[in-house]
Image 1 (spheres, helix red, strand yellow):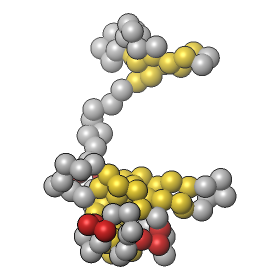
Image 2 (tube, one colour):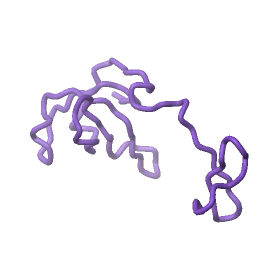
Image 3 (cartoon, helix red, strand yellow):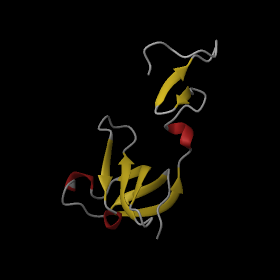
Image 4 (cartoon, one colour):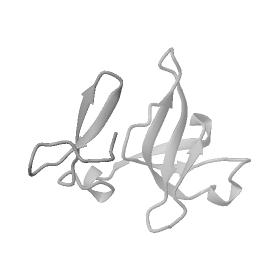
Amino acid sequence: MTISYYEKVVVTSSNRFPEYVGRIGVVLGISKEDDSRVSAYSVTFPGEDGGACFFFPEELRGIGEFVDRSEFYDDNDRIKVRVDGDEGSLINSSTGSSEPGCE
């Protein structure tokens, strides 16, 4: 069964993180191999300060519930980047000019 972004998952087993077994988290990242096979999921546990942990697909089970992206990200807080060759710089949203020191 495929697990998607923002899906709630239960940790079914983990030798690396046994303290998370049985707990429910939310998928914020998916790592794929060159052949598009999922190798790991980044799972966060809302209400905790621990950040995200990486779990292998066989350590998780999706529960079919999803949370809204806005619970984790403020889509109104955006940045613009100007790319010139191999270099990029942040764009000041009010003036349209590159921010100094952001190369």
